Image (cartoon, rainbow, N blue to C red; front, side, top):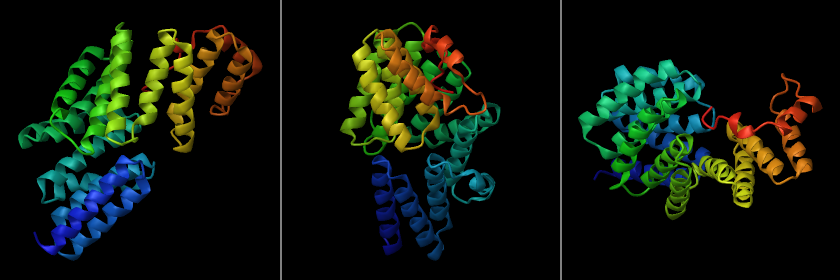
Length: 303
């Protein structure tokens, strides 16, 4: 290898390790440095790849919106096929995160087609997981299940930071099973996802897995385990500013407290939840309604 390739690869490995440990800003900085090294040595192809992956970190940090036009331009302008795939894939992810599913779908399809052409299991796994999530968000559960199983199968021969994505696919499938009257099987898969993530020494999707376990154990009436998972998810989500998971878990913890007969704790969670909906003006009367409502029927864990 040339010195520039050695340095570039070293920076990517450092970025991947930072990502596995949820040090997203540090990961973004490593990708930015790799991008600069590539540009300085006239390797625009490598620079484009590093930029696309840095965009992914900015997505996680909710700082990517201003960068989306540049990312989309790489779909047509980059000389590197893998960079074009990355740009297409992350454009789909960006639209999904903005709840613009109709815009996300065509980019997801193009990314899946490119992954098949590359014959790369990591790319195939990522695309199948994304497409499964888009199907799930549209309540197409059968399609989502097929896609998540494809993602899991593609992850079987992958290691390193890919194991974190494999854990995410397991968790997503577990949630689908919970939503389609296969509760115990779904909970077991989510527990397996938690174990996989622990063995991979990653925590980039830990809050989602704990949220889903809180939901599953609540439905199974294992209230101590539901509360344990929910409180852990809530603390992590607050620290990481994951607003949707914070709101979801507050709903679930409220229902857990209600079922345990602890209305004082339930009111506390619901008042905290009300702070996330300042425009609604949640009153004590509305909280009283929530106390006699099955909140598992209200919450939507995938937005």
